[in-house]
Image 1: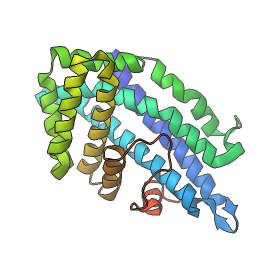
Image 2: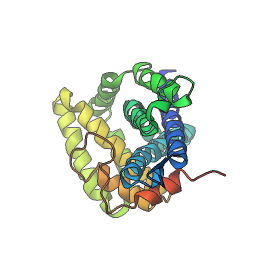
Image 3: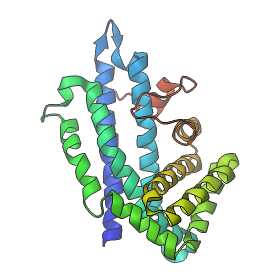
Length: 252
């Protein structure tokens, strides 16, 4: 029951983030600053695009986990993926949800803070998803339990990630193995491993879905970049407008 509820939490967090960012993007298209739509202002475009990358990866990873649940009975590889990635997906999606919704709300300004707006309710609800059915440390310790007593399961998951990442897969899996070894010897490193595995698996799933430039941007900014503490740090090499328009197209 807890396993299924953790999948539910991941899916709910992904949906909540997407709803919040869709509302913020819509508001940015309708508001003008100095004669130009807010969504077209370079700083705002980059913030929205940066948020959109995490929202896309969270949704892809959550539904990839759901797919593994459906196929686990007939496939050892999918069963391994379901066991390993349930705490990983639940941890990452519910951890980033409050920050994503808060940044989306800030993009809307004061209008986003009033309770009549859906995004205000999303902001209130977001932290709860990380609290129930296993908080962050519980998910990290659950993953470490698999490291200690079922490490062979990771080989199947690493093969999936390496295959879907393509050319960069072998190098990233090598880094994941190092993080797993650190996690095994030091309990306090469990959060490092669980986050790195979430990011690698999220990137892998975006590539598997054919996301192309979206997957490239996510991989390079989440796994190959330096420390970032807020959204909006997307490198200028990536086309922020393309990301926003592709993932959150304007509706008639």
